[in-house]
View 1 (cartoon, rainbow, N blue to C red):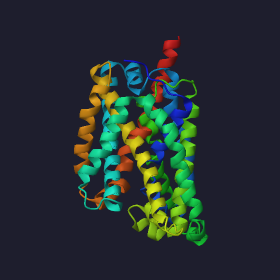
View 2: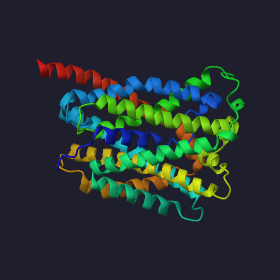
View 3: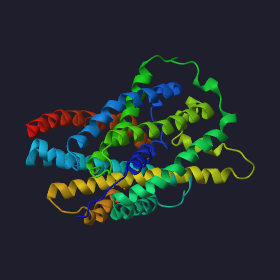
View 4: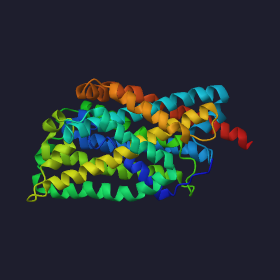
Length: 360
């Protein structure tokens, strides 16, 4: 298999779009209410050392991905067993994200189109992207990220006159408990989901993996912070919490003559770019995992069948939007915590010991 390489800028762009992904159209840290902005800042600060642990794994073993590292550190059988867990995590996250975007497009744009058709075409784009390889996706991300971030900033500026600072007051009115809960939710969705990148980020051109992970986290976090606080300032926390897609509802309020609809299309395009990258990264992580577990030299022949499985399962993973919201609030955080936080820390501890043994 030909070695694929990424520049630092491409790696950062992929992480930024991945973080933006589904978190821009859903409410993250919504449990914090009007103190959501505090929860997002805290979650970014807490995520920094966790993301550095994720990056450290790749630094310890250059040109190795997480699946290679697991087998090297824990041995063939235990390593493949843990690899299977992370392969499942990547696969299932792809299912969840694809369903989010299927619901989003179905509710906001294509009301009479069967959801499975929408998800089919979305995932086929991702299948095509992953088949072209991570290097091509990185080049596209380098271009897309500029337009996506610029769109968010432009909409924020256009909504400035509709913002009400009183929607953020009083600060800490409900105490610290909602902020703690919101911080945990934002930490899990989306900031530490970057563990996905360790499953294939083995070939950055420059050996500055820490910089790639941290800058990706900070830029993506800043965009998410701006988008989320704009929703609260414009809609208010109560209205924002009642809506399935508050960012889309906020954009509709942009009024510049007759071109408001064009801005809705613009921001929807930015959302879809993030979704395309996020599903593609999950699909890539799952395919690479299956290839490593079974000893295949290349993952690309697995992309179509695994992509079709993601489409099939995404149609049945939730009964309706309310079921999806309940899953995101109450089930996903404790489910994802071991994959995104606990296991990476444990693997890192054992990896440091293994590195010392190999050095001696």
